[in-house]
Image (cartoon, rainbow, N blue to C red):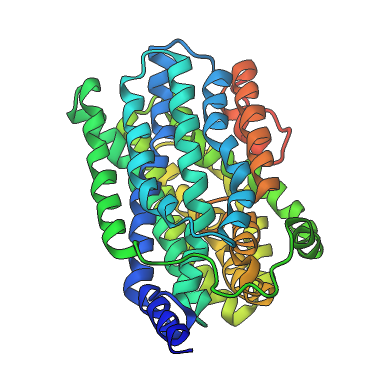
Length: 406
């Protein structure tokens, strides 16, 4: 009996991540910082697409398929999350910034399309593991304050996606193409930091008395996930056009690569502000009114963006960032906390990923949302190949109106 007590004490000492510790702000902030670094690298691709199109003589459709190579591995996230509910996969979180950073930094020296595809698939696998496990780890370290913890996680991803475009286009201005692999040093340092801070953190719960199988978990999620499909479809087409193809569109319109990358950074930064504003307003007005207002406003401002020129486009991008990328954050963030708490600790990683990710909050889409983004990207780029850049954005905004320039 004494031996059992000593074993229990040893287990408690070895795992400082249990819910009884309450909200562990330092470790939650550590994961959020890792999210910043990781998503800085994953957002390198959109500003690089114009360079790949020019250097490798790619069509717009071929360039769009590159984003698919990176996103396809994310379809494994529910399975990884399901596994993370049973065994500790913390090293997927710890190693991800270094692995993703290395793959994305090597894009600058890739000499052909096949190598680009291989690097992007590898980066996608690393990203899938990170985004499947890290939210569950954040939830475990947040104790009863799951909403606050996932808020840290979400803002970290938004900041990373805002920094990435300006980092890579600035590097392209000041570094020669063979020197871009030096950018991976940031990911290596982040991995060392995460190892020091998180090496003794468990992802899964100690006891799993209520851990259903994957099929039962998905059936439990169905009543809530099915109504969200329409929202995912609407937002998927607009988000794919803006977050992936905005630099390509602006360079086609005559903007320089650095300015096009800065525009994407501006859009993502506005998304951070929108996430904070969306959460604040949804607490006072309700999540449904805020989400509905953002869904209605976003396509309107997409049309406005196409109708203005010069610096006015940047002003419209600020509004689009708030309404499309950030304004709907008032919907998924509080709901993810309540939903994952309801599901119990046995399936927290799976539930947090699929609900929190379904609307695009915090760094990823659910499985359905991934397919929508694939379709949206390919449809938009095929439209560009056939008719030019503006019609692709008209399609994304849900209109068949023809531009006077066609």
